[in-house]
Image (cartoon, rainbow, N blue to C red; front, side, top):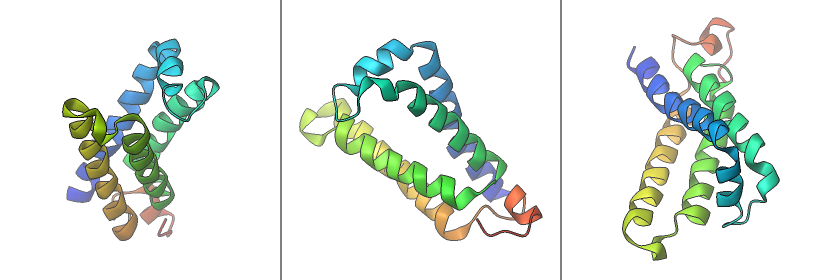
Length: 124
């Protein structure tokens, strides 16, 4: 039950963030251009967050979603919240790295028994 709760908490962050991004996609496109990601990646980014977040919540190919989200968190922290920005950026970068750590734990240990992965006999 604890693993399920952890999956819900981690996944909900990305489902909500992705949904919110769809409500202001132009703003996201502009923000992406402040880093190395081009504006046309705004929709794919929002959709990725929603889909990968749902995969984590449901425990469906959890390890793949977890490693993808861990990499996403690290990249976002490095490119969009650099430490040299100070203050809020340092906090945001550390938050992203911490969430990445949670996803790495999920990758290492799997989705648990209350998951689609467990029902289908997979370890993903």
